[in-house]
Length: 401
Image (cartoon, rainbow, N blue to C red; front, side, top):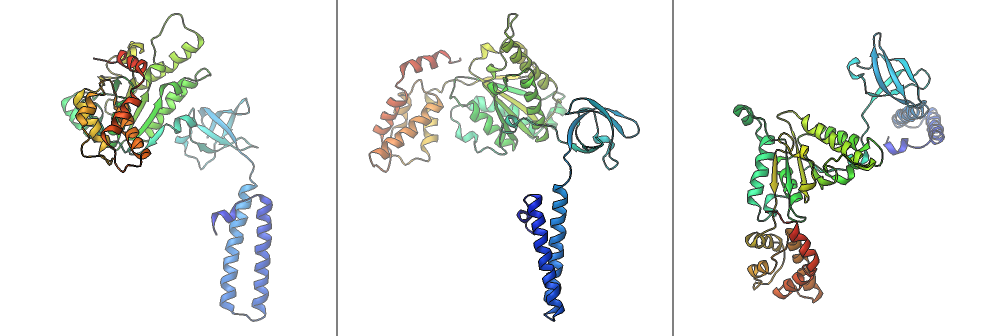
């Protein structure tokens, strides 16, 4: 019987049983008056199976609800002290069919409503925001989609990829592989793209979190989310945790702090603890990104946490030419489009700006009903995307040598 046929309320299922029983009785009558015995026998068998399935589902729905509790201490004689969601602590029995090794302090369990006996173990709760941080098992981004950052890509591959793909060579050398890398650079220069490409090359699970999402309203919530984030990474290893805008949750500690600042500091201390708790050779790597490195706490930058700090600069002329080629590769463009001239006119543009310029050029071409983008379309796009001189000045101020 299809699963949806078993759904519904107890009343629906009771009606279903009555209908099946009626059909069963009808077939018995038809059998008695001499209709095809094989046909009737097969139908009777089928109806009996349906009746059993529906009765089983009805019995399941009529079971009393279970109470959620947490084990505080295990005792001899198959007993445990549990903290019930209803308030007080109880000494309860553990069902015989549960493995003793599964019942440990801190384990979430389901309790019988009447006897409060432990009848089932439950998985640890995971915040929905943490579950939503998992982007994809294999990001589509590759290093070929990133232009002008060959040296930075090489460092990331040494820090992230090699320990995941060839951990044994570090053991032979007698050194511990790096645990994490911090990408520092202006917005739009390719920090997130590098992290995704690293995850693709290692077939690692990519888990992205924005630092501000770890700053919660209630005390201890941010630290709990950090614990759950790293626990999820361990369960889905190999994995890469990418924390964007790290400065929003790892700012320098001060003596004069508000309650909000102290909560941010608690979250950062939990992050430091998780970074220190990694095994020397593990399947979990951490990547952070920020455009304000001067705001980060020095404890986060010491060796053993973020072992490498990689500066992602604004693209130079050659890098801009390469980025233009990457984004034009799938476009229908005129043969006379001069990429070098475009690169020279976008002196202060980031990789994200160049991508926006190519998109705008395609839009200008479509607006005039042309089937390919021409030089003048790219020039108009440059004027539009890079027109805000104030924004250009701000971007210059956050450039790093």
